[in-house]
Length: 155
Image (cartoon, rainbow, N blue to C red):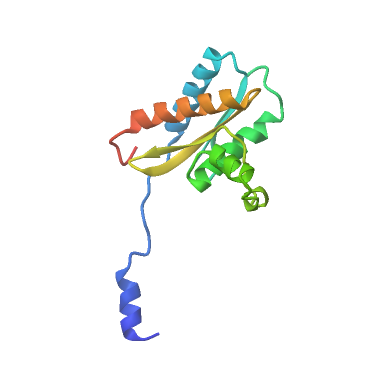
């Protein structure tokens, strides 16, 4: 490597700092989801992940199917890693973009990223008995946490 190339590489930062959801933020998302699930009388599994898709918090409400546990985690993980609602992945598959079906992402409605200042800091995934309720619950949880974080960069 030439000295010019070496100095160009040296000028670029070698690390970056980014905001992630804390345990308190994850718990706030779970509580908001629980509240909406109660309003809708919708037993649900609720998962909150960090931007890397790793589980931060989880709650399984009474009456939800056991299989919903993995579905909620998978929905949250997909939303975090792809930085978009999981329903967009499902829609892409339904429109013929079948590569998503084999890419290892869960492509079911109910995963919503949580963003602060335009950066995904985590995601919430909900799986219960009705896909429309899953989206409503996950969206309400993400929006409540985003509203609490609005204007912050280090929370």
